[in-house]
Image (cartoon, rainbow, N blue to C red; front, side, top):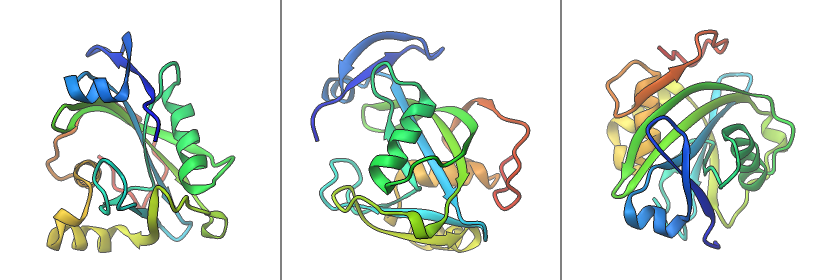
Length: 188
């Protein structure tokens, strides 16, 4: 992967400078990220196993899409780009749920947004360079797996799921949408 240019942001999510991704992570500069959770109509969450060749969290289980927001890009466009690049999806309607701050790991400080949407599994064509495999799982089964093998999951994914299910997490909530219409994800 080429070194992408990212917006560095202050605590109010205002862009203060642009830097290469490697510099951002070397210096621990705050930047932007997005996550997309895609559910089937039956309420199963699409989760991915990251490729073993990924620089961050190789081979770990993650949400449907996790993406850095590139310089000059907004959160929604980054989420749409991530769905296209990682899952081959176009024209999926997604809803912004929450904006939060979190430390994702050493020198990885982000302000991120989570989006939710509905996906038809028949149209998903994941990128085998970025993703080892995908699976669809009910939230109750996901929580059971996280309870017995948390180290198989990306740290950030565990934290988002814990927050979404009313458990303590490391998310520092900035804003939350009050009109969420997806009953199978009990977001507080």
